[in-house]
Image 1 (cartoon, rainbow over the protein chains, first blue to last red):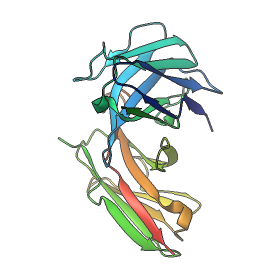
Image 2 (cartoon, chains in turn blue, orange; image 1 turned 90 degrees about the vertical axis):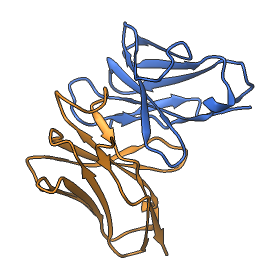
Image 3 (cartoon, rainbow over the protein chains, first blue to last red; image 1 turned 45 degrees about the vertical axis):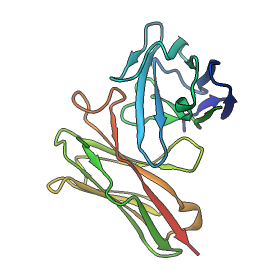
Length: 116
Length: 116
């Protein structure tokens, strides 16, 4: 099946620094990618929709200046957590839907962010 | 308001027996349902899906049953194996209306534990 890859898989940073997470579709093109955050024992929470060549669409309650999303190509979206704080520590996951496919999303491996 | 509910946070099943994971939904517009499997610190992987025009879909050891009148679906795993121990997310899609921006609404997940 289609493959979506995230990098890095885990990152530890100091409070106040910015962290970039990459999401790549390896064998298909995706005009739209999605970013999620997962809290312990909770479901995936959709943060934003990343649109190739245009601005991301953020879900209610998600700070767009805090979580910068860039979708520069049909195979790459990046999420930058700016001025990270300990409460930003979480598991971040991206997904993408193959062009023309319906229903099924392919997820990345996830990135564990720990802010000290 | 939770539109997709997985009321059992965890389920313990003996190896070789049948595992039954349940999922209820409230939005009658949902017409496509998916199950995802997630290991710790990894992204979800697609397992099996079912369209609302069917009441059963089978793939190897995995079978999903859909009861539209009861707005209920279940995932059966038989026989259960140790590698099946994971968190299972139920997701629903209402194409053209409802759902999240990614088209999916997730339940909170059920942690399946297969005991030897």
